[in-house]
Length: 160
Image (cartoon, rainbow, N blue to C red; front, side, top):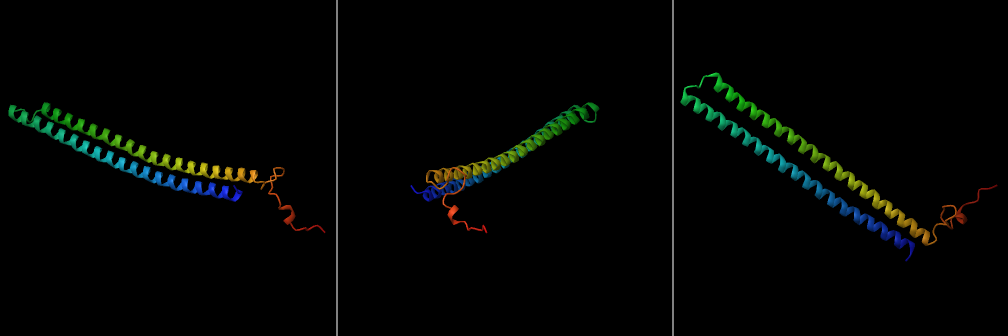
């Protein structure tokens, strides 16, 4: 097989491989973004659930305290305050968790892009290695000086 054909096939393979790698990378990034949105949606739903549960607990305490005639006591106020405090802690935890999820999602995107770049560099290196090997096998390189054979005769003579 001629050296030019081997180099051409190698280059075409590298280009096609890179196009597919870019498609895969874009699809992976899109999937990661969708997953982050899904997790954000779940966090928002969990927050609403925590708020709803706290409201129900507070309403039950108030209804019980009115029925028992202890609505204005410090004990009722302490229980209601404890419910509010627990709700705030739960929401804070959910916010912190959401921050970690977001950071992980962003880091996954950075990782995906770095892997794609490494893959491109590896493909170009493999194409260059194939071209060099084909050139050596085809006698294009002289093997002695690292130069291209046949160019010595094409140099102009500037010696006077």
